[in-house]
Amino acid sequence: MPRLAYFGPEGTFTEQAARALAPDAAFVPLPTTPDAVAAVRSGQVELACVPVENSVEGAVSATMDALAADGPPVVALGEHLLPIRFSILVRPGTAAADVRSVASHPHALAQVDRWLRTNLPDAARRAASSTAAAAVGVRDGEFDAAVTAPVALSHYPLAELATDVADEPDAITRFLLLSRPRPVAEPSGADRTSVIVVVSHRPGELAVVLTELATRGINLTRIESRPLRNRFGEYRFYLDFDGHIREQRVAGALAALRRRSQRVVFLGSYPKAEGAEGWAGGERLVADVVAPNRESDYADSDHWVGAILRGEDV
Image (tube, rainbow, N blue to C red; front, side, top):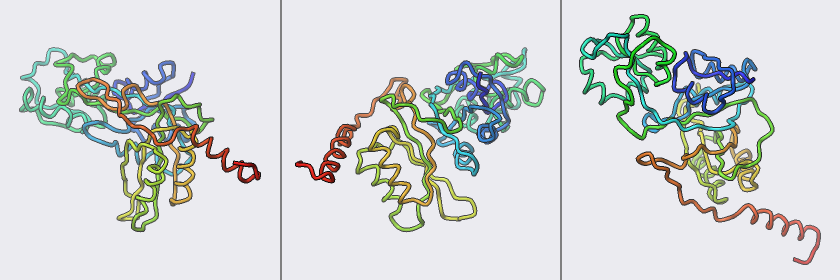
């Protein structure tokens, strides 16, 4: 049974995502997301589940920086999209009028801001290291209420003041399942590839990188930047795009990125989660993206070049 590290303590949304991605794993809650990534790097655990982006708050910077940290590489094996609905937990017998403080992770507090202003307007907001840590604080009498994942109710002796709470009904967080590098699985037919790229600090270098994708008909689905440590004004770029490294056009693009960039970190080619093309009102949106070249076109062109080199009549 593989051991899987996640951002704990017990009762976080990351735990919910981890159980969906690897239901048979032995779960190991750790204090932070970087701790979970480091546990995979060191071999303490075989897997980790980490949040990478939220549709309301954007990229999860702690995860992005942890993925780029020095040390043994990690790769994504899969992703999970988790609709985010919160529960407001209190000690048994606590009414809304009794709540003077409400705690959670800052991302969670931001996602229920309107609900809190309407329903708990006099409650002071307190930041916690995670939604589950807020639940622990309520249990221990540090806070009156916690904004948590629904799964927290199964771990702590608390009561629901409210549930299914969300300012944005379509809010989603994307999670990645990480491991140390292993032989890359065959394409599923609906895959995503993720990389980190550090380009030279010259005009047009990022455009050159993106052109390597565009000329191969590769659909870029996400680009984020994070500053390079101790190099003010310089950045690393996180790219997600459609396709799989076992596809020739994707492999060619990655090889080109390697040639043209200061550094490329391969973060995995893995199946997209159901509905990963987008959501609206809870309904799946499928982007109409048509690549100008099929995989068979690349095989045909390679055969043509090979025939010329062999002196055959083409």
